[in-house]
Image (cartoon, rainbow, N blue to C red; front, side, top):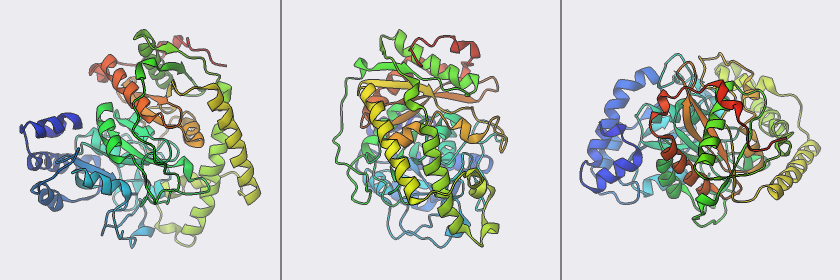
Length: 459
């Protein structure tokens, strides 16, 4: 089936005349009809509109490619639910910047994918359509908040799409579902028309980015999405870059508390790159000390205050995911406390960047655990997020890439963390790693013994 090909191969098939946009759309719609009742990834499917667009003369780097959009991005005339019944009247007046760029590149939007309420949890469940299930095992969660997007792509209902990430919401679902996801440097991919609005005081932590089945697919989507956006206060006119990826130095970071298979995935990825000739870099893990706690103040404590005001008196309309993280709030964030946190964040970021150069990539676990049965995380969920949050706090690009599977047969990936604006370096490194890893990773069980080697010095 055409929908089983990676996005880049679909594009080649279209260019060679081996298939047509109409055939691709029909293959994906047939998969949605067959698979979505089990996976439940879609808030809405636009079958008629997709067929009509496939009949048009489309041009651009994504001409004829069926994609999806996370339901936190505006589509003109459509409700942006963001997982909440409280937003059922919020119909968008125009497309978000990311959706507009996909369309301008010739992509065909198949539908909107589900999220947890307000994007505020690491599982995808809401009062609109219920829970989204993992493509490999419906008893497991695909993660969140881009869980619907990752599940749709992993189950071949979409060739690729866009998600958003303020605390791992692209990388955790990508890791859970066995696909690739890039959290770009803030401002590389325009965030205009995303809800919640990505802006000050802590909006630098949240970004929009691509999700797809391969790193090569992610590159195609990133090159389409990247660029200046007047609606994004963090946007910068950064030209496309071509770093010398082979000169990248690889460091390894294994934060405490992650499950053995997640640590093993990071070790396997780092060792594979070292054995392929990439240099080793020192990394002092103390440079990340305290980063997760500062992120919690901005992402959990501060946002909780806003969400409590938003939901006041209407809590009965909210799903459990809309309130789960609210219970994790530890303090009321005053203006003075906020300024102190931002100042401390800036000082920590400067120390980190002084020690790590542009050509260093840190390989780390992609989350503290692999996918788990619905509502049954094997560890406290915010502790599981510790490997993800420094990249959000410090505005670093980071990318999740599949590595192998755990003892339960669920995917486990590694995370590549780079210096600001080194997004293309991460994508290039992920492409090389995919070549080294091969396509048999779904049969590669990650043994805890894999973590025996931590050659890259850490403190």
